[in-house]
Image (cartoon, rainbow, N blue to C red; front, side, top):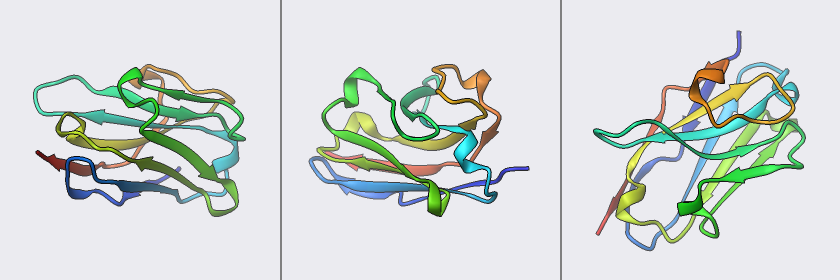
Length: 124
């Protein structure tokens, strides 16, 4: 069983930055593609970014390209999401998710494990 724990959320003004972290409990981290999803109130959960199991391939939602950066440190079983130039529309609960595969998926139903989420609030 893999447990995922997110951290780093909080309240920030528009234009500010936050770095989210997701730490996995097990040392099988390297066999999982990792993802950041988000869900805003009244909206469906959407994939924000994903990274392959060795970090050689990444995906970004169009609205975050150039502002967010996903990375992973397999030695620390940890994934990161650096979020810059934050906008009020980035406000959501951000979830870490893992899929046992080399490459990620855009579909939340394909994930094997989920974290409990961390709230990001961007004030205008």
